[in-house]
Image (cartoon, rainbow over all chains, first blue to last red; front, side, top):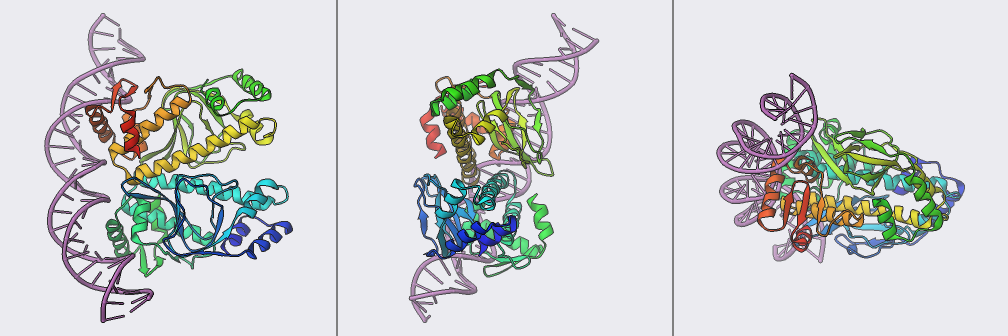
Length: 224
Length: 224
DNA sequence: CGTGAACTTGACTTGCTTCAAGGTGCGTGG
DNA sequence: CCACGCACCTTGAAGCAAGTCAAGTTCACG
């Protein structure tokens, strides 16, 4: 379970916390097909824990342009208690398996002393999300298509590793080039050409949805 | 005082909170010249309350490119307790007057029941900052130079109004076109040309540092 | 098989950058 | 008081990264 992995890596869970998480695991799982809208922009959302699949937070302009603000990967938690309306829609980019995260968030918010590792881990996750937002701003503002893509892929590798979902330097990426473009402020055509250039330069290989990073060092250098 | 104004607008202060704020106002003010580095990237920062002047959070790439991640306007609070290292540097874009914000943040964090309006206001401010980050991502990812500039100026107007620093539809903007460019992912030259086009289109007037918005409606429409 | 979504490739266009050369306002020191 | 330097703004010309349009190709799936 990616969340356990992520929390466990960060902190040692207390017995009470282990119980809470085990109880969570017995909750019913919610399945959602690719392309589903988990909730539209401007609505308050029930918090959810992503077990598997990739989603995103996105904003739409009046003329249909779409900006993917951030990606949601397995182990991520979306929303908060109490739920607040957000200007971002949440979309499923692949089939998703979700768990209600309200018990988790409530426990951490209302009894931080009883669930110390959990609440610290959740605060750290929120902090990390903030850093990713700022990284995204740097990418979009200053970097070339080549650098943006490198940075994004490096970020995926790092996040999936933390969730135990990377196999060495490779991982499954259930994204269309269109979605990548909408996140990176590029056209899908240009994403395509840039990926090809990276393959030609020996940075990576693509086998269907599988991304194999051949030169992680260069990737990180490009990302800055 | 911009902070009082912003907090007061949002919430009614309790007597205890009024006392705390009055005590703060008796603290020594820290003055900082334009172009100063309040603290470099990667260092933990003491939290500060900005009384006057404009600053920014910025990140630098190895080759010198600079991305201004967010602007700090009067009434804004930077940093947290306990201080945490951040990948962003904090810079003064004009002369600044600062106050130590540690007492404020500590009070809100440790005695939320005694300072309810204050802690709610600070949470709301953090939330608002988050929204601005996402807006910035949409701007950089999807919008043209013209739209980006419109959105940024609309945001300035709105934020300065909340701080009581806008005079109708005009405000003082102590920014170079270079700084605007570094925030919007544009060259200073292009910021210049775009501003001229806005003037020609009757969107705004510039008189030195004074920005006079002539058509706030159009500005907001462009921003999306 | 057929159908649609995603990926690929080529030709052309464009928004923005870069480079370069002034112009302007202002503080500072002779 | 003037001259100098410096930071900032303005304008023109040329180049380029990325977008758009359009025509396939590949592949998964019913």
